[in-house]
Amino acid sequence: MPRGHWEPGGGFGGSACPRRIARFLEPCLLLLLRGDATHGYGLLEALRQFGFAPGTVDASVIYRILREMEQAGWVSSQWDTTGSGAPRRVYTVTPDGAEYLAAWISDLRATRDEIDQFIRAYTTQSGER
Amino acid sequence: MPRGHWEPGGGFGGSACPRRIARFLEPCLLLLLRGDATHGYGLLEALRQFGFAPGTVDASVIYRILREMEQAGWVSSQWDTTGSGAPRRVYTVTPDGAEYLAAWISDLRATRDEIDQFIRAYTTQSGER
DNA sequence: CACCCTATGTGCATGATGTCAATAAAGACG
DNA sequence: CGTCTTTATTGACATCATGCACATAGGGTG
Image 1 (cartoon, protein in one colour):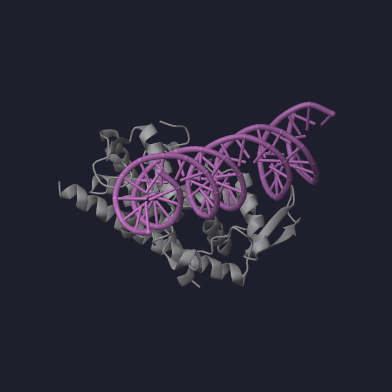
Image 2: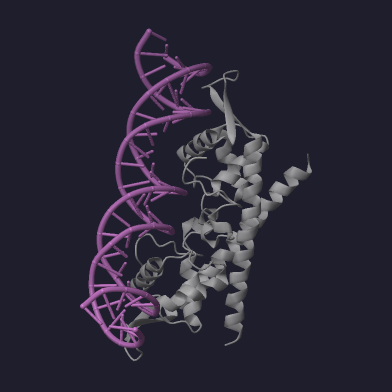
């Protein structure tokens, strides 16, 4: 098998691999930020609920996306120095970010329907044999 | 908005954008090849049934994937010089390719379930407000 | 021949993502 | 104080998927 092939259904550490969807971390982080998670490091563990196995996402990826989203205006940040340990950059979702997340949801619905259509086409073709 | 952002739900020519799923063309081509389409150029129009608007997929992408899949052993090809015009490279799916497609289907099912889970998390959080 | 259409292919640029290293601050401990 | 560990953040580089521009070639048509 040529290098770089994803071995669908088998590889990728056995997880269902939400990373098959491009930029999926973006809406995940937005949704978590609307909840109670607020800073980069805390988001790492919270991602588990969306199918990301622990250790599969590097922290640097989280921070990079957060900075990009702040530049885009989807989130804003302030420093929090009240707790013990290193200061945390705390993120909140802007109104624009909420709209962006809503657009993501509508797009994901469409993507899901496309997948369903493809699976139906497969089972139909297989059943006709 | 920074360049390169996908504007989910709005951009991308208004189509539902199946390309949100990485390498989605691969299973599409395999499924079409199990049907009646046989050569690269003919696959271009046949892709329409999977949500690819005409003109959204460049022909070079099709040929590149076909050659990669042949190297991987998922398809095999022969030249067809019987018709008029330039010779066609005609592809057929190998048994390994059929297995690979089946793995793709199982992976797509999992991906769809992840999307559903994410959408449910969103609507739950929105409903609680 | 000039031109167009079909058909296949190559090369390069860009964007998304993964990996690894570096920086920095605060507290614990000798 | 010096340094070790934990938490938090950033930067630099490599790889992969994809899009775009262009090259090649056969055959029909004026």
